[in-house]
Image (cartoon, rainbow, N blue to C red):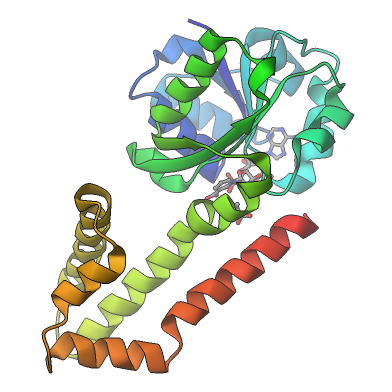
Length: 264
Ligand SMILES: NC(=O)C1=CN([C@@H]2O[C@H](COP(=O)(O)OP(=O)(O)OC[C@H]3O[C@@H](n4cnc5c(N)ncnc54)[C@H](OP(=O)(O)O)[C@@H]3O)[C@@H](O)[C@H]2O)C=CC1
Ligand SMILES: O=C(O)[C@@H]1CCC=N1
């Protein structure tokens, strides 16, 4: 099996490695990071090798995942530029950095995939949007890309012009979902429920509701209507949420997220 190398073992790099471990053998994964102490700790904890610099990683792995913050991309791309060849599959998970920009830095003949995963990949429950130039990859490579992101959860191929929308709906959205869970739990604590019970009840309600959307195929609005008894408690809450601009707040959050993608 071709080796997968991760550059940057922070929040997302580590989530990807842990997700990959569900499917890939330890010997097929390697990583680098500027923080050598962290490298040692992760190697010790997970039994995965790290190498001492990005150039060495690029020489050893066929699939290379760039998992550093966008501001560190120029340095990382320059580290690997002279080592990667047309045989490598270079996967960027940065928001806002386009395939054209990546190829400008790496050389036009290099082959680039853009992916936008999210942190639930850590548990194999991630969602990743992926785009690449169809004709640049063999069927076997396309399968390998699907396997890599499939091992982190669900994956969908999208057109590159939609990658910023993917950041809004799934790359960044776990943060808003955690805020919702936190607020929901606070609301129950306010009325006397112990905090630990409140987090479990809030999180399980979000998990169960998400599964209802995914597994019944019903429209979220129809599922909402089934919770709202006429004249009941839920419709009173829904009315208060509408008054506070709940749905508009989420759409405005996406506007801010999308704008930021275009500025990075
Ligand atoms: N976090 C998330 O939920 C998601 C993040 N992403 C994207 O993933 C990328 C990484 O994000 P995230 O994991 O949150 O960031 P982190 O800062 O947590 O992780 C990046 C890691 O890379 C290290 N690093 C920095 N420069 C280099 C370098 N030159 N060579 C090797 N390693 C380096 C950092 O070290 P140090 O800390 O010392 O700088 C850090 O350990 C970003 O582009 C982000 O936009 C995409 C989807 C979701
Ligand atoms: O906040 C960020 O910029 C990254 C991209 C998606 C999630 N985290």
